[in-house]
Length: 104
Image (cartoon, rainbow, N blue to C red; front, side, top):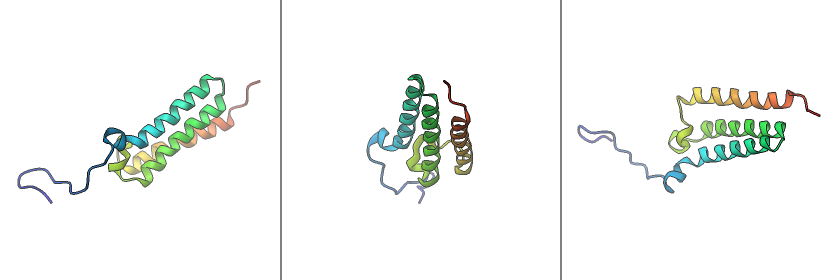
């Protein structure tokens, strides 16, 4: 439904919880990335890189199953573009974390 001469009206109810309610998928992914960086800083390179890769894969999963209205700032381009980029980054990080030799 559109107003005469104005923008389209959104009949859906507003998302509750304010900014956090709208951005919780991004905050969850950023929390995983922050804990991954802390894990790497504590000299656990492989575990931190795996955690970082899984956080990016979590972002891909959220982008794949949630509507754009609910995913918040994880929406960058089209759904297909976002999924290709996030899946490529997440899988690459996980594979490289597994392939890198363990330091003594």
